[in-house]
Image (cartoon, rainbow, N blue to C red):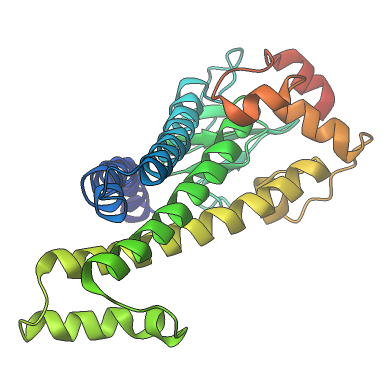
Amino acid sequence: MFTRMLKLRLLNAVAPVYFFMATVVTNILHFCFFIPTIFPYPETSLMVSSTLHTILVLFLMFNALGNYIMTIIYPAESANETAIPVCSPHCSDKVDAHYLLNGRHFCKLCKKIILKRDHHCFFTGNCIGNKNMRYFLMFCIYTSCACLYSLVLGVAFLTVEYSISFENPLTFLTLLPLSVCSFFIGSISGLQLFLVLMLYVWLGIGLVCAGFCSQQMLLVARGQTWCQMQRGELVRNCSNWRANLKHVFGSRWILGLILPVQTEACSEDADAQKQD
């Protein structure tokens, strides 16, 4: 038990560092390599295209980082419950939390009682619950879009800079093993190998975030949490899916789609009454 918790705490510290490093590397590749190489000539049409791509990259990065920060700023712990319950080492809960009552869980990593706990996110270092679910969902959406867009620009960069053709669908599947072999025999540079590795990193993160966000949106529409689904609990929800989405995204949900701002003050008492 101690070894497992130590591994989880280490992951809780490493994952945010990995996210910030990947973000910095992605921005450097975009503004120092991709955009200057794909749009090299000072023609009017290319200048407009370069400006539009720059604005789009900044918009995606701003929203991904903004919602990431908002997820951390607005934690999901209960302000009215500070006593830490005693959890048995033989607790049957497999999601690293001790189930309490009325949608409240005690997270063993955060050591706090979480309101309507969904899961513990290692990339943000805290739990996802009633107050930060919307920011987490928007973080996943914009991270997925930023990664997939980076993948597109990365493929375009390799095509322009290294004349690699991606017309054959098998090219992308064989690109990584061929690049690794070519690097060890000295036919390509370390930068080219690193760019190829980043393509697969963006693809993996983009698909994982998109899939996870889709599942979370379904749970939110049903008024259920991941923690409840893991325990096999069926939630009797009197509200329809629109009311459930409005409860998470707020009344000014359109503003929340384009800016990482608070759209509605979250009331702890209202959440408790809804769970009751």
